[in-house]
Amino acid sequence: MTYFIFEKTFKELEFFRNRPVSLIAWICPLLRPMIKSKDEYIFFEDDDVTCIYFFQKGQAGYILPRHKNLMYINLSKGKQFGIICILGHLLNRVGNFEIDNWINYKGQLKRQNTIQCKDQCEMLTLTIQDLSMMKNELYEAYTDAFNNSLNIL
Image (cartoon, rainbow, N blue to C red; front, side):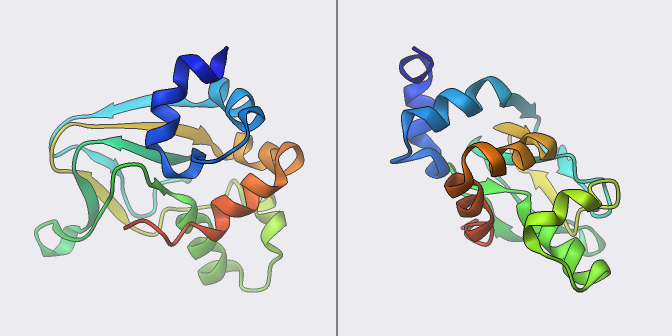
């Protein structure tokens, strides 16, 4: 039933396309909607990493605050973002680590960049604790999330 209620939403999000109904049924209760207003920030560089995002609607992008909020990457509708901060933080500050053990560093994870909305934006969030649980429940989707983390355009 969950699938049919949220079918349109999940068809618009690239990560969920062609996924089994079991993934959608498992993840749906864990996703939280987030709405940000024009010029509002989704997150700042050095914020704690608490969740990942699935971009649904609006215009937003990676910006350079020191250069009058110059946008250098636009977020595309349907894309996921936020996992790259996990990887970036670990590569920059930890060095040698096993990717499946990233959750051991959850209290240390910091955002690597800043994202700002250019108009009202809608997205869904998934906590990093739930992302970690996905590893045990739906390993293929979990690895895809990390493998596709650079695919934000």
